[in-house]
Length: 236
Ligand SMILES: Cc1cc2nc3c(=O)[nH]c(=O)nc-3n(C[C@H](O)[C@H](O)[C@H](O)COP(=O)(O)O)c2cc1C
Image 1: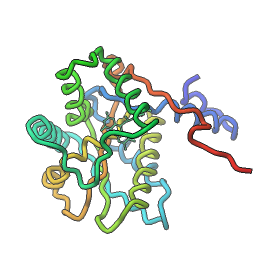
Image 2: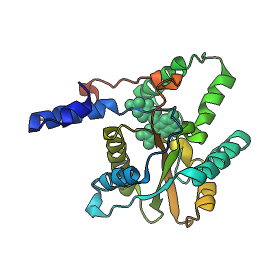
Image 3: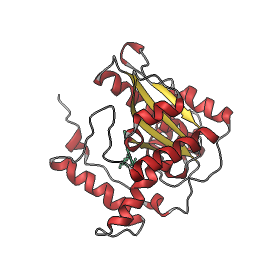
């Protein structure tokens, strides 16, 4: 039964089942149809995302959504810069390689993504081509850029994560797909310049979204999760 079917039935149990199905349904999609999302639906979804909780209800996320010509300007600017430019210079320190068990998870997600696309481990060019698709928003017609005021820190950055997950679930509930993208924060000055954003707004991450292209091989990738006991300790 799909998440949508569950939603049509009332009751707390069904609501829990609906939410669990929705959380499972959301996954990172890296191939989109060109079909734009109607502005009314964009506004509905972002209104729901505004319900995200935050420290002292400060709601520190500053969100810029690009569509149409604005999306094309950003897409070609970021892609050209990534293709020809040097190392990323984000506003926030990058997590490059992960230590310990986190490394195994990082490798697992890369394997899933490259495996789905038939890109071999030693295919450096193929991996690069796949990575560069980040900067074209994986062909999504829309992207959201999430900024944080420079006067804020890690707590408010966590609030922005709350916002992003609420947004991604709201998108999924409306039949839309998404992929959060740190890669879209690699060239923050260019994004600020192209969108006329003040230098004190620091770019945390971007998020591509739209209608999934079910035929794109990257979308066959699936990730798993660690056992509950690895992440959560219950104390009594
Ligand atoms: C903040 C954040 C940044 C991410 N950045 C990227 C990115 O730059 N490129 C990408 O392809 N995926 C990116 N992802 C997607 C993760 O790889 C993905 O969430 C993870 O592998 C789990 O898979 P799932 O989202 O399909 O459940 C990002 C996810 C988050 C939450």
